[in-house]
Image 1: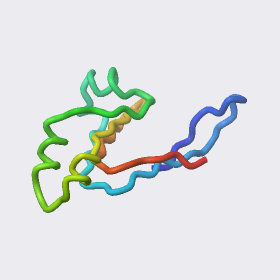
Image 2: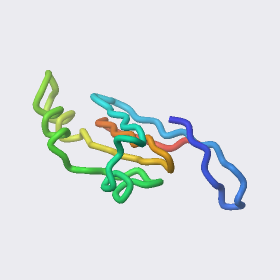
Image 3: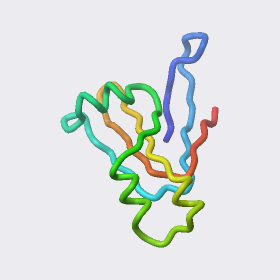
Length: 94
């Protein structure tokens, strides 16, 4: 996911959020975003416990290490959308 953020000097700075081992994702557009999506994850990547994460952990063929490593991440932007990703890991590249 490529983003343009405000750098420390106030100038636009391009970054990339990379997600590895993606099992599932959701994209909720502005007209369907809830207040809690904005309250929880506006402008920041947050980790959540959720029934959706539990469901993904319990389906398919995964070893215990993979099941334990899965995480539910969420980030929401100004006018939407809200992205939710269930993955093994993530990182930021400048």
